[in-house]
Length: 384
Image 1 (cartoon, rainbow, N blue to C red):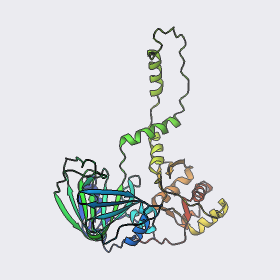
Image 2: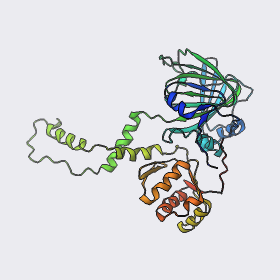
Image 3: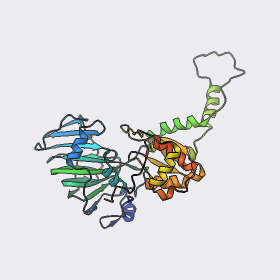
Image 4: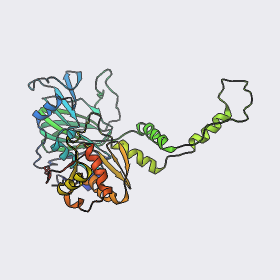
């Protein structure tokens, strides 16, 4: 069964949410996912925190003193001890069920969707009052958590703390979330979550890169494709009386030449496809142990269908795709089917029956890289 994005959050239509709340205001939705069963429970999450494949942090508080440790951990504190929390990033990369849950939030484009972070906390555990620069859905999975939020402008931080903790947090709203409840926070809203007893919270986070952090890699990518021809020359140069001074004519000429080529929208699209599809640093793809040749792969794909690896990021724009940090221009005959793969993350056998070599060739390359797999038949993922 295909995993479809949510159309409602509880009884709240997603279209209304995107119009009225997205990037505008916090929103609490009670029973947003009725009968929600968390795919990763406490035991599994704590096991992840002990593995090198996971990006994990342990945060402990004693009064006003905070301590932060980074995984992988050899052991974690006793669950009977209060005021500690462990957070594991990218749980969707580690577990099929967590990945399936994240797919339910694809009513926001993949270019913005980041990852699923899961946190476990003992009574009183949390990370202190803080502000995020990105949108987040806070989904209560187990137990209860108290959330206090504020639209305050004073974002001064506690000096010397190992976390970015607000010095003067003044909450204006206070909620207790039960399993299945969801709190949406847009960027810039101050908030503090505190466990009321043991609890498990799922955080669906979104990407919001600053323009500055995009600028340098974009210009590097543009320079690699600009193919600016010619070499500086200064025929007719007269003897210099000030040899250390930058020649005005040289400055004028080079400024004109180096600023003449300007990135076009196609250059920006090429860069973003590669940049936004770059996988997390800890991701390692597993290549098939006994890879099929292209002809055998074609037969198998038409019989079984194909599915993207849960760690694969695949974006498209017009006739090109970005897949796991690489940009590819597609042959025209392959575009519609591979765009369907990007949207659905799988292709059924029937859709591959008439597939041409132009489609099979990139699928086979991605299969050899471990980015795509032959399906096992009907999807094991049920809608959550």
